Structure formats: structure tokens, C-alpha cells
Image: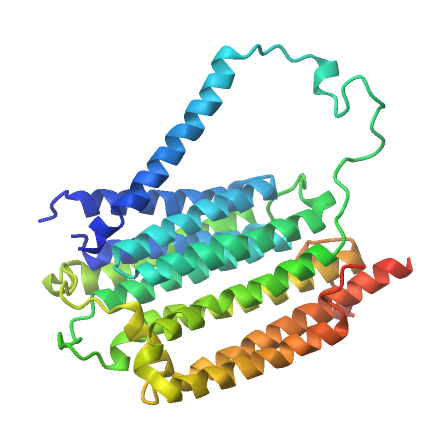
Length: 119
Length: 178
Length: 111
């Protein structure tokens, strides 16, 4: 049934887990491991860091992620529609056209607002 | 009764992933690690979708939830970084824990077990009814299906996009003026 | 195969953990993570009930209403994505204005 069709993905996940564990184990077992205070410093034999190392990022990164998420979610609607497109014919095309048109309004807004510019 | 075949074992593995990840999310001190636990939990839910023979939803779960929403959480954690390692994790810890445990007990003892537990009808899924992604596409678009919610969803997405840009971008401009 | 009640128990446990996260965590981002867990629990319920639905006739030509569980779950994804996008934007803006991500501390409107 469907579960057997997912066997390759299961094998992939298991192999990926095994490889990751093996790599971490090898470097842990065979590599020398004697940390000291100077080695653990952010810049080894460099300048002393001032203040916290975790600076806030500009909000632009978040904007890009939001725009990505909105267009990523559309896969939920575009994928089944594309699979069933031949059965739906012109009617499906019109329905999807309206759907896309509404989204293009938002897309034009963000373009005009300059959310796509990085500066 | 219940045979311990492959799908039962897979169910337990994914259930443990889901609930363990969820516990990691609500108990972790470092929110960045909490986001990683959230990804584990969402992956377990994707596995449950596969067992429920909804492979398209499982793929969407990995693509949208793990690939986009969890990434968005990571960004938000980093943007508000200096306060992510708060010394006090919880407010109202014990009342909330008690409330959650009571809610779970009430759901299981009061609703799930009496209604669905002993009912033979719900022990087996309808094995020959497996709807495909093509059927989902037809149902989403067809007139007697869900075409109106389908179009309204695009308005919701547009609204969310514009709202997020307006809210986050104003903050950005204020930041630049300072 | 696993009976329906097991899926419902997993879903109820996930929902309760989410409720605990929403009620107890101080950080606003963590509260939103709890809401995500609750939404996922609801989604598991929807798909499980759809899968175990005995009223679905096993005919070759599917009726759209037979897919209601999957369609509902798909719309849940959209709502969750929109909610997270706007919710996190609000939290980031609040953080920039109040220098705080703790919901209790943003009480300017209380008067």
C-alpha cells in the first residue's frame, strides 16, 4: 500500500542519521580534545570581544522570510490544481486566474513599497 | 486485538517524535533550541500524515511548516535575541501545568475513550478509500466543492502579506532614523 | 492497523502541551510556538477523522465532500502561515518599541 511506497524515504532518513552519527563519533573518538580557556575564546589569540556577541539582525531578513512564506504556502493550492488541470479544463484555469490575480495585487503592493529592494 | 505490525511501530515512533519535540518546545530555556525541537515535532506530525495515507499533506507539512514557518520562528528568535535567554522562563507555571494535565485527562476520559475507544467501527480505517492529490485538486476548484474558500484563501494570504510588510517595515524605518 | 482513538490521544496530548506552552511561557515567541503545536493537534484530528470516516462510500468517482478533512487541513496550513507571519511581525514591532517580548509588560493601553 502507501507505506511501502515510502520505504525509500525511510531508508534515506536512516542512512542520513547513521552517517551524521558516524561523522560526529569519528571526530569525537579520534580527534584530540583538550579545550583551554584561550581556545574557547571567540577570537583565539585575537582581540577581546566587547559586549554581547549576539547583535540583533536588521528586520529586512524577516521581511524576506515573510514574502517567502506567503509564496511557499501557495504550493498547497497550485500543486493539486496542476495535477488535476487536464480534468478541470478552462474552468479550472479561470478559477486559478482569479486566485493568482488577487495575489498579484499584494505582489504589486510589496514591489511598489520597496520590500523587494535590498539597498 | 492490536497486532504489532510495521505501521503500529511507525505510529509509536512518530507519536514519540511529536510529543517529545513538543515537550522540548515548551520546556527549553534557549528559544533557538526550542525552534529545533519544534521542527522535530512537526516532522513527527508529517509522519502521522503518511500513516493516515495523506502523503500530500505530509509533503506540505515538511515544505511549509519545517521549511518556512520554523525558519520564520528562527528569524524572529534572532531578531529579538538579547532577551531569548531570560532567567525566568515561566509565569504561572504550576496553574498552567495543572490546567493542561486536567484538560488532557478530561479529553481522554470524558470524550475520546467513551466515544471512540470501545467502538469497533473506528478500529480499522476504510482501506479501499484512498483519495489522491488529483481528487484534492478537483475538490478545491470544482463548483460543488470548495471554490469559494479557495478564492478567499488568496485574499487572506494577500492580507497577511500586506499586514506583515506594513507592521515590520515601519519598525525598520524607525530603526534607520535613530 | 492503529485504531482511531490512539491518534486522538496523541492529538489531545499535543494540544495540552500547546495549551501549557501558551499559558505558562513568558516569551511572546514561545507563546506563538505553543499556538503552532495546538494548530498541529487540530490538523491531526481532522485528517484522522477523515481517514476513519465510515460514511464515505467506496465508489470510484469521488464527491468533493468526501475530501473535506484533507481540504480543511490544507486551509489550516494557510491560516497558520498567515497567523505566524502577522503574529511574529507584531512581536518584532513590539520588541522594537518596548524593548520587550514579554506580553505582560506591554500594558500601555491599560491606562
